[in-house]
Length: 427
Ligand SMILES: [Zn+2]
Ligand SMILES: [Zn+2]
Image 1 (tube, protein in one colour):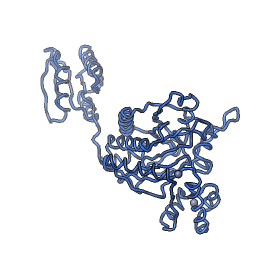
Image 2 (cartoon, helix red, strand yellow; image 1 turned 90 degrees about the vertical axis):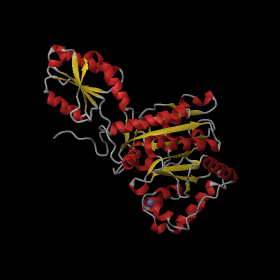
Image 3 (tube, helix red, strand yellow; image 1 turned 180 degrees about the vertical axis):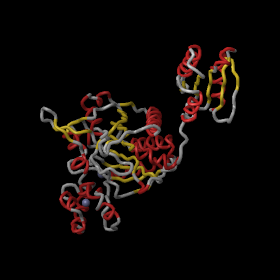
Image 4 (cartoon, rainbow, N blue to C red; image 1 turned 45 degrees about the vertical axis):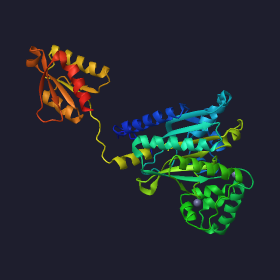
């Protein structure tokens, strides 16, 4: 039997691979404008890194990590998310000592052993950013703006909604008080909770809101307590909202939005496609002022987010419906593989490619008819045919593939210039 890819892992073929690249390029462009620089972090990290950062009681750490042990008995995992690795790198290379803000973005695969479903695979790509050293509400807003510009540039303008919540901080009257009131509430509905939630609710009641089974039920319960933030957290969040309104960014408040990671403080946000079924989150993030210190670094405010590339692609495809695949610019055909024709065809192909034009052809040994069929299949805009008879008169034929029976005789010496002129007029 032939080999098959592993369950939950997939090949990404053209044109999907190209669509993902164009999303990545849009992100690179926007993030450069926002002052972010690229970091590349390893795929493999220690298990302990994610226990410490993402949180022991999260679904990710409890059951979704791909784990392995190396020959030295070290517990390693394929990274399930990007922030932990970026924070590790930030500390390992003392980037904080450069002073000011450190703004980094990454693009790469993450791995989670989830049940495969539409738009969700065990290896999936994230585009993410982290900004260290800006504790002001303007930092949250800048991150949210960067995310919305990336999605707008990628073709999703007007096709997503933004959910916003304030998770408070660790001052006793803030999140700890919220945790206590959540726990008291969960005690009253304990019998309705799944076994997993009953066992973890005392350790981390916020996680119960994330439970795929219990979460929606609890969120519909009007008695579910909401966070009453301390004065500082309230001011911070009010400023975030005012600055977003100032930028005409629409958002909805969602008191039950907690995100699946433990490290968030104050602002958390989620971008949901209004096109994909079940209004899936396509991106999300938030502020995590305590994480760098918790991982052994200096007190450092930080904010970040990640885009799920596959799900964002689904949303873009749903919006764009059938995107016309972009064909090659020029197809170069030759009537035979006589030496003169081969040289001409190869020469013209390379001249076009050197100029950055996409060009295909020179399928020597195949009939002219077969070559033009390939040109059709590749969606070529123009075709050049080097024929025996024309060659004698130092000419060739130029066809506009989108116009039936179009054909023009062009001097071989002028064909490159003529192609460039025609393509320039077409685009
Ligand atoms: Zn549950
Ligand atoms: Zn607070």
